[in-house]
Length: 262
Image (cartoon, rainbow, N blue to C red):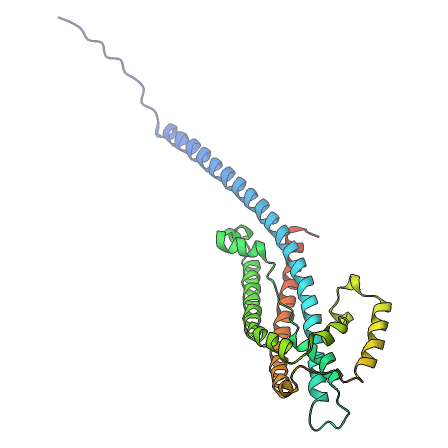
């Protein structure tokens, strides 16, 4: 008769399993928190990089819009003077020199080019989420809308370009236009000087008294109507520039503060 010996292992208490579970849970949780913190750090770093490049875009756009406001306002002022001088109720002496001098601005255009490369990239890649700031994201959306409004008015004005070329060739004599130097207000700051401004003033005073021939004087009234239509459009376009400019300046302030940028 064989005798079988059975080994008996001591059963573990439930507390042992509890501590094993707790240690495993803590290890997994700690790993999750570390990974989450690492991802948060990486996203914040990327957000700061995007914020930095976006700030540079905003600076460039800010400068461009300021130039656009000045250039378009000058065109408005010259057109306004032209319409005043050519008003039938105005009894002042009228010369074709006035039409050339003030009217040439009616065929000048300043076109806005969107410089928000970073914002466009982030919109299409979905990386705006890196900012994790709903207020900032709302500012991006607001700026994007302002730029869309600018593009709307730019497209409206583009319809005037082809017609302006017709007046440039059919109404005005190119040889006369070529003699008129560019208005100092249309020049970049680095190109302006007291001497240039004074020379231009002297030239314009003399030129306004002259009566150079037009290519087709029958187009004068038609051209004045054209300028009157552009006048209202330019005012609307400048207002959208100013709105976008205010939005950009506010966004730059937030980005500098949020990410400690200069």
